[in-house]
Length: 140
Ligand code: IDP
Image (cartoon, rainbow, N blue to C red; front, side, top):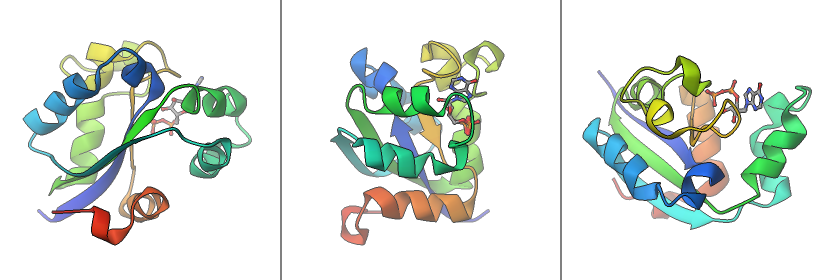
């Protein structure tokens, strides 16, 4: 299996409840390495660009408002099959459907306030990483 990098966000509901370390413990326990990480306050423009794929969805405004409501932690995770592996570790979008032990089952509040983001494919991972990190900020 290939060593990949994926992009992760610890979302406002989790940072607000001081769960950055708890989420990172699950990430590292799953064998993924945090090779870049920073805590930022997203601008409205950054959030709208990041979630542009959802701009026609009814929840878009709510999603953008949520993402800028508190600081977030943006990360690059590295490991074997990291993109699919992190999606497994995150659990289903709606925490009610997430498997035990996943980040969303353990910590998420609702389908919107669901604690983490993870890229869904190699192409999106590359675009999302480049939106938030310069190459020299990622130390593998
Ligand atoms: P994902 O984060 O599991 O990849 P997506 O369907 O890509 O899920 O949705 C992106 C984000 O939009 C979700 O993580 C969640 O925060 C938000 N979202 C998705 N569906 C809803 C909804 O029905 N109501 C409110 N927010 C939603």
